[in-house]
Amino acid sequence: MVNDLHIEIEKLKKRIVLCERVTLASLVGIIISIKFGHQEWIWLLILILACQIGKLVLRRKLKQKEYLVREVEERTREIRSEKDAIQEESDKLARALKALAEAQDELVRKERMATVGQLTKGLVDRILNPLNYINNFASLTSGLANELRANIESQKTRMDAEVYEDSIELLNLMSANLGKISGHGFNTVRIVKAMEELLKDRHTNLTQANINDLCRIELEKLKKTYEREIREWGIHIAFKRLSVPILLEVNVEQIGKVLSNILRNAIYAIGKKRETTDFAPEISLGLKINLDRLEISIQDNGTGIDEPIKDKIFAPFFTTKPTGEATGIGLYLCREIIQDHRGTIEVESQKGAYTRFVISLPIYQTRKPETPKENE
Image 1 (tube, rainbow, N blue to C red):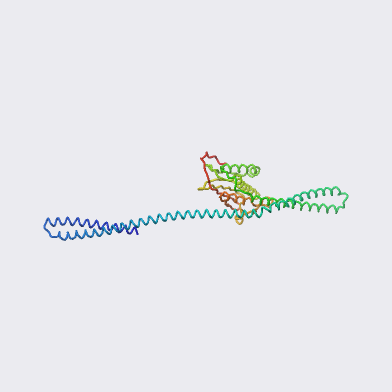
Image 2: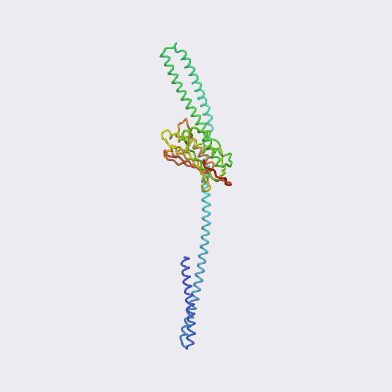
């Protein structure tokens, strides 16, 4: 509409200019006619009057159009201002809704953990005490069986051969059964103690820590713990640190557990792949800043994760390792710890090729850059 009004205004201005030019030409014509005694000056005078009347009409229309344009533009500015204000309020509302959704998710998660805690806290001691009795008596009975075996062996020459063989066979079966009882008992204790670990409070002892140093320390622990495997398997470990150190407000012990758990899983995956494949094993830990968040990526080229179980690896007590080697709460606790720090953890993997965990944490504070160090 405004464009149409501007076009009409331009047309009116051109008509006014045309009237002024015709008026000027008519005045010149009148002067010439009077000088030479012609009578045409009367018609020229009438033409001048007509042009002046027309110019007055055109000027009135021009003022109306210009006033209308000003009103439209003013209203347009008001509408745009109102639109911007509405958009700003909409953005604020969207951010508030997002924060509310995150708070609700966190509340639901904490309530779920509290419910699980209330249900299991009283059971832990009730289960551990009988388990300890089972394990202790299994161990004592195994010792008694060994003593009985020694007594039977000492009386071998006095015993009937068939009775001796039957007794030894029964003792072997008894020892095997006691070994299974003891093994399953200790595995059950590990699972119950893992349940106890789930109930621990992980929301205290937040301190500012240099994430470069924290990652470096965990890598040094890994190299020391798995020194033989790293040397014999030829594992190459790479660390891409930040050139600008970042101070994060974290629970150092808990974040260290997360890094340690994922790195140990990487060693395990590489060891399993070496059993069937000859390859150059690698583990990399990288840090980078993405907008207002810090990303920690840990990648290995081990066995990878099957696609059907990728969504299950963060579930409590789910594991692909034998019962005697894992309880299945490691990655679950990793996710809980990261969520406690208002972060996220995701996994990318291809079976037989690689596994990559990406941890994202909010950045709270930075400090002056230090001299960048070479990658380890």
